[in-house]
Length: 233
Image 1 (tube, rainbow, N blue to C red):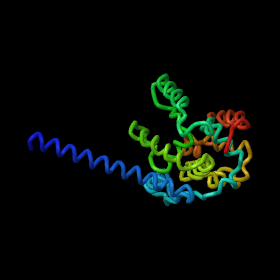
Image 2 (image 1 turned 60 degrees about the vertical axis):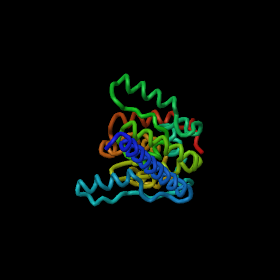
Image 3 (image 1 turned 45 degrees about the vertical axis):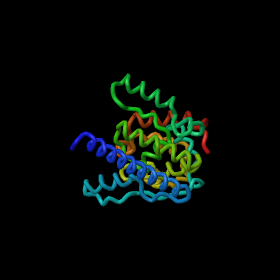
Image 4 (image 1 turned 180 degrees about the horizontal axis):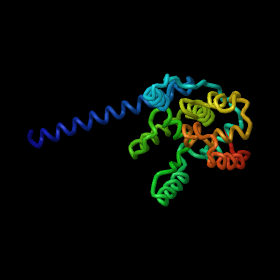
């Protein structure tokens, strides 16, 4: 192949790559617009959980039941915002200050322990992506986050997050988690119960099997202290 032919081949390959990339983004946007009015039935994180459970020769069935925003305790809404994204109502999907702080914390520790992700970013990741950490995945997460923020209001974003968040080994959403840990509905969670559930979010499968972990108790107390100040939609 001569030089001109190689340039033409490269140009066609780049054009095809751009078309595929645009098609993927259009698919993401189409799903997000549809989910403005319809509830997602199965997320990427749920599919990963099914594969993980099947590999352990478990039934692979997930524990998840959708509940409307008004049927979720205000205590849990405030606890999750206090724990995960204190500036949830202020930012446009990305909290650059939190990301910078997380970056500095990770540099100081020499490993990645904090992501600085907002609730909107976690919705994007849960719906479409995986827990794998990479710059490419982070870039895609940001693109999806902006689509979510442009298509949904904050109330819808928080509603979806509370219904799709992983809260245990095969446990997804506030209703299933409230029943799993406390035997009550999501609407009836007390401040202490809500704070404990919010404290579990960074590592729900770990805390599902280690419910007496000292960190969990300390984190619960910290969230309880900040709960009254949390602003929710």
